[in-house]
Length: 476
Image (cartoon, rainbow, N blue to C red; front, side):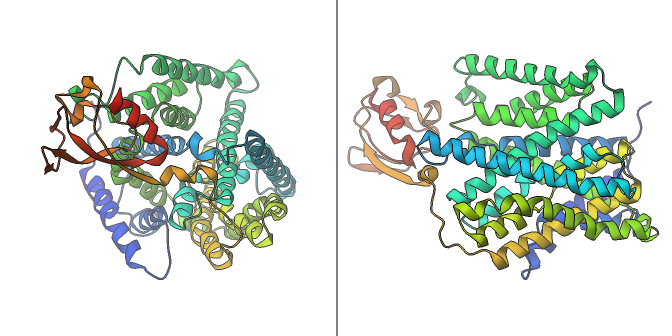
């Protein structure tokens, strides 16, 4: 018999998922990430204080699905066009090479700092913790840089590339090490390669058949077929991950990355729809449940665990500070130190990695709680330090920032295949919209069902770098 749903706990979760952003937004003095507020609320209503929420199989399922969905959206944030810095390939290669060099230094510094912690008995596995402390949080850094208008600068792009390298490499490494600890050094350690092969095959199949199955077709209007496709892809790779004994977060991350590669014309629209379900329901449940399951009493009863919090913060910052000094040669000392602070802001991967470490008995329950508290503090402390220290001088817009420039044009369609078709049946280039149709000197504000007739003049607007595509479409 299936276990009954605990509606009381689910009700409390959904209510606090709703009101938490309102309270966080009311705190005008500090820009606290919403996920931090959700973890705080979870702590208050969870084991540490009120103990109002009791986890059952259904809440656990929603929490794990929220985690998988969060990693899917993290993979979706990887935009290849956004990573291109300038038009010269040599310049791009040097930037990426510099980021890999910074990552290598981070790894070395992390290893050197983990060795004494291992000898002191604070951690039980040097290699796992080395990659865990090297992890980054693009899920936090990307919106943070967007809000401050830095993302489309050369400096912002460098920060983005470095964090993506840290997240992706550390995610793979933690998965491999976890498998090694669980099964020993056997063929099972390399089963994750099957996941990459499956992801590559799926990507190629989708790429070859995308022109046959047009998800933007009017036949699928109001069915949100893109969202269905996203969930299907994510759960295919998550299921494969589960079957081969690999962490499901790797499968969901790869699914998001594949979706990022295959989407073009409707990427922003689909991301918006996916964000609604993710950040509106599933992801808040995951972060609130992180707080619910956090037992602060285990930290308070253990002075060593309490002392670990400032120690972990120091390690995380040092691991990012030393490689960030390389940016001093490209920018200046201010940008290098500012980069170190924002790199040190941690989020989901540190929590997920700490969960994995606890399940593998690499750290104790008290240490896991220390890691979660460390993550919360880093989300608040380090972005504030960045805002205080950062100076926006000597940074310039990257060449690909033109992607955000708007082009408005008036054109008379000559492509006879478009005549008598409604706007929703026409596959316009990414983010192009028809704002007005002039027909027989009468101005018409179009809707999705408005048809284009011969002799119409269209007033259209969209991204400047797609203007040639829309001209080719309308003129045949």
